[in-house]
Amino acid sequence: MHLGARSKIVARQFVMTADGGSRGNPGPAGYGAVLHEGNVVIAELYDYIGIATNNVAEYSGLVAGLTAIHQLDPNAIIEVRMDSKLVVEQMSGRWQIKHDGMKILAKEARAAHTPSLVTYVWIPREENAHADRLANRALDEKSGKSTQQINFLTERLRMDEVPTMIYFIRHGETILTPDRKFSGSGEPNPPLTMTGLAQAGLVAEEVMKLKPEILIASPLMRTAQTAEVIAEQLDLPIIFDEAWFECGFGSWDGLSIDEVARLYPIEYKAWLSSSSYAPPEGESYDALGWRVDEAIDKLVAKYPGKRIVVVSHNGVIKQAIRLATDGSPESIFHIDVSPCSISSISIWPSDGLRALRSANEQGHLR
Image 1: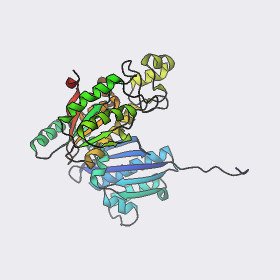
Image 2: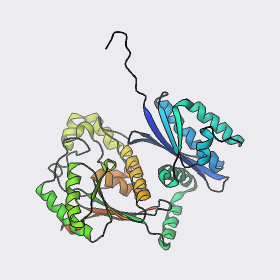
Image 3: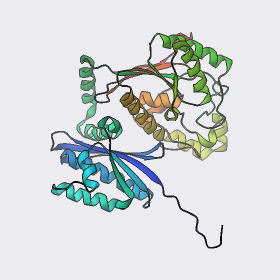
């Protein structure tokens, strides 16, 4: 490098999806926004905003997301994706803003982050399911949603709509499994043991009875090997997708619980105490939950009404179960999933409603 030359600073790039909704239009309203950096969901935002219209709620989600990203990096490049044609066209400068309330919110959005660093893209509603569900969560939590959820499921079971069925299969045993050593998305990336391969053969026979149409797997070695055994039985191609990677345990990968407790006593205690804590160079359970939440939405949008097998990992499947039962983030600490067990979830494509059908089935292994 010549003296005096400046190193090039690469701006951080974010993708944000946002939505809002009103029950009554105007009526009780809330918004949701999901922030991505690369392929990672870094935050979920949602809030109840009182009585408002759908459009005001959508603008509120936009403002909240832009404000959050600006706090992370005021020079970031942002791509906003929304299913509101109105907001996208108005913020892109192609349509006039006539509503006084939206004029104020549009002004707030432009003030939240440098407009020249923000682009707007319209997406179909089914691609915005994550943000939409957060907006509804804000409304449900305000109005008391436990009764509503029961009623929604009861009504859905009476309808003719065919749900998407996802059968989650945890991979077979590896050399790290018996001692419950940390085995995340990084090294040592262990293969299956002979016991693990035998387990994969047994679960493959059981999966055949489910007559799946799609086979998806995490690309890590242990899930890939399990999926290959299943694929031989089903005569289906494997679709590998990193969205189904195990939680990243960073520096703890390959270590036993006792080793982590001894080498990282403060960090280990924090990890035990909160789903929001990430191990050194790793990923928090909350972040994993956001990733799994979005991966499920994308799967249902792409394969509505299909029967899908997803070969994945303990943490991922625990999060899928938690999300289906609408458990708190900390409820993941009360779920466990065994090697080559089957857990199944129904999702109705029309509104994304989820229902847990089974968890940790192991009868085929006995």
